[in-house]
Image (tube, rainbow, N blue to C red; front, side, top):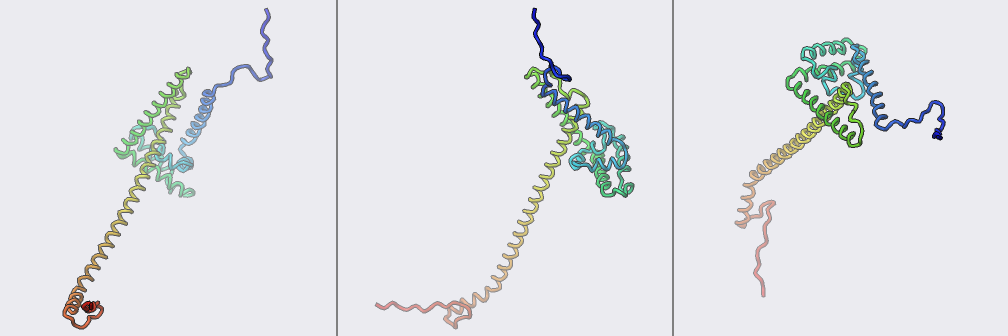
Length: 256
């Protein structure tokens, strides 16, 4: 029986099918995640320079909205540990201990203080935890939709976020987005309130100016009343034309 001839392949190649797009995406994600974890590990070293750099890195305004991110603690960390971490961080980035980098140290120190005060306050801590919980809900919904789509396409139900570390990373990213959204809304409200206060101040100023103008007009009107009455009486009595007062001509009978 004749056997089917197979085409010879160049060295280093095989006849396996190309990697599917979702597998390529997963590979890229894994590479990216490994890089992120390496950076996080590097930044976790408690040295003044690295902590100051971290709190002043590009996008710091965005990342520093999350107090857990600033203090580099898990949201489930007991309060006693949060306080301990705050003391460590504040000492490391204190401007007096970083005179050669004082300006950036001051910004880092301010971020650390603000974060601790947020978590130290019971209401602030509760709101931050609510944001974390909302992030988890959104990630869970995202995973649910991914698995539903995989099932629809006949693919395995596994998604990268099934891995615990990747799940935590997804929650972390979603948490940062939520903090950023809240900050954006706060700024929009503040801008709107500022414009409202400005319009009200301008309206109040216009009303006050009108009030002053009306008061001055009424005052002048009252002060000139006597002069107007005397002028009228002088005209009615046929007396000498008062200065500045109009005197109508005498009526003449019509001639036919």
